[in-house]
Image (cartoon, rainbow, N blue to C red; front, side):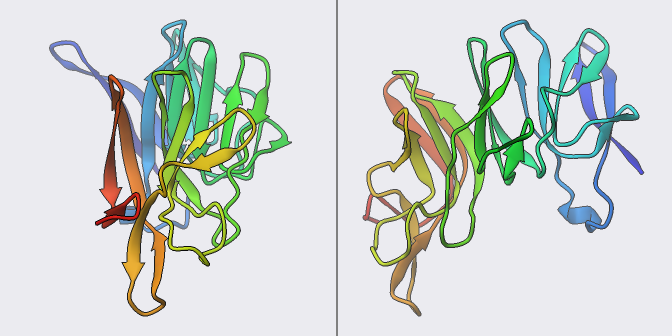
Length: 212
């Protein structure tokens, strides 16, 4: 069944697209469109959990060029929950293990011709990326719910910075203390925004950088 999920407001509502959601997922849990961004050409990019737009088979990530929806390379194999656009580079984050026909764990970036992995590997649960943001220096930050290592340390998790070669935890990360296991488990980052030199983070967590 179709669910109208993309509209435009210019003094009156106008439908842009109808998005088909995956079958077999209970209605309250179907996420549909999760993120929208404009690329450097002014075209609309949408990401989320869907299987087609306006009858065109498009899985989880699509771009509207003029009046035509199309894919950005080969599709991801699972939902995309986060987008970041910087110049001609588009970065996507989510639950996927491959995108563009290449292996890519949770994060990858498109340069206009191909997808390049920015593998974010969670050895505990696999993790999921829910937010992406660019820092003042252009560095890519990822938030969600993940651990970059096992839970043997009491560092928080769930927020990391790409250093050009690997993901590094941001100042011990964000966590939720589990009284049963006596471990600091990953918190959940839902969104991030840079304001000048400050990074604002929203989500579900009770300690940041090791402090409540």
